[in-house]
Figure 1 (cartoon, helix red, strand yellow):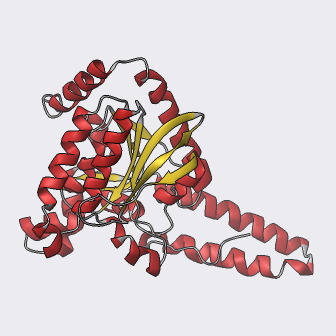
Figure 2 (cartoon, rainbow, N blue to C red):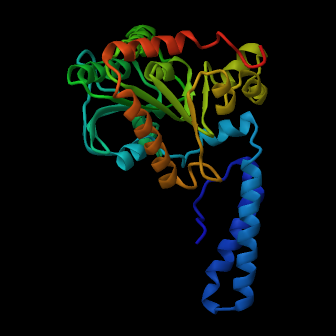
Figure 3 (cartoon, rainbow, N blue to C red):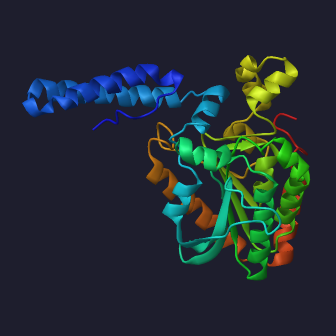
Length: 323
């Protein structure tokens, strides 16, 4: 059956019309008409071809829209799919709990791990609770606390990044937002255990880097990773946020560009139609990629892990495609 509750992006409108027609025909399937079944099959084939065509030529702005899709798997989904016996740890032991970053202890395919991720929420209530994944200083200090715990007990750290950026509110700035981000980034770089980061949606600004300064940084095919949002960049460069599409192209926010510049180490393919259409398959693929890299990093001692991480980040920007 087609899903009548699915959210369609603007560029998917022709596909929405086709799938609505399929849904209409399926609702009449009880009449058991061979002609209707044949027409439904024909429309399904046409919809599949159109979906493949749309997603084979996504420009940077459309990829940005897909990365922000409300039905895209979030941290809570990855945690449920990949982490067993999860025990959440809350609070930074200084000020309060920040639900925009969720973290704790668990088991990943038989390994004890510390897992940390941005959570955006999936409906109005949870989006407000998690502040749309935009962390305050308390969230980054909680992440530092969890990484300290990981090093103490020699546990790998897995992070899942999906944020438009750190929360820019007055209270966050008063409590040391920039320092908290810098300290979290520093703790990533000095961690003596394996650290693997996966960008699952948006990787925005320092709010993303604070959890993504890892030994291995991966990103999903239709995710984005940038120093600022396309809208923010357009507002600065052209004083017009409506030119976000131009900014997305100029900033090279997509996975192929970032892989070419060696900012990320691996692009994880998504099923046709994006992660939001095939969440379970996407999360399994992410888990397989994490397992592969974790097996390699576990062979390295603390000194080698720190050195590899340092060299990885110092190498960014030294050689550029076409230079």
